[in-house]
Image (tube, chains in turn yellow, blue):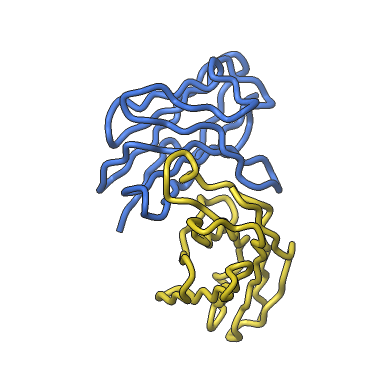
Length: 112
Length: 115
């Protein structure tokens, strides 16, 4: 799987937008960008994924640059419950490459 | 939505014994499930890919005779940690997806403590 690079930690004030960046400069044309988060002592939670278009769902928005070498996950109004480790992962949908390989992620701390 | 259930959530066992962890897909069939392990303050590491009706595929460095995986049905995969040692104490997490183009969904993990 292509590797991703994320800042190790970020802070965000409650109610503000949290913008989490991710670099994936070696992404292949058939690889999707996935975002998961893990709250302490729980399994990872799926947030959103995309190929090349921007995506939005009830949890977040995903902005992928035109060259697909980087992306940003946006939590529009962060709450204390959004404190977690956020993982950006690139994943193919075919064969054995469909597995998810986790990096070190970004630890987001939402504060009052 | 799709749900993956793991059991037990916590288990404590004595060194030398074996422990079985179950992973179930509750409202969908999963031909493939993935097993991960996570040590404190570290990321998730893929251990093996569990394939329904065939042998599991193990990642490099994972002992297949120690971590036995059985995927006998489309809704159940089991991981058995055999002859457990304290260094096997970890957080074990399984995942599955509805199909190759769908996101992986994860169970809530099993915290294993070997004394």
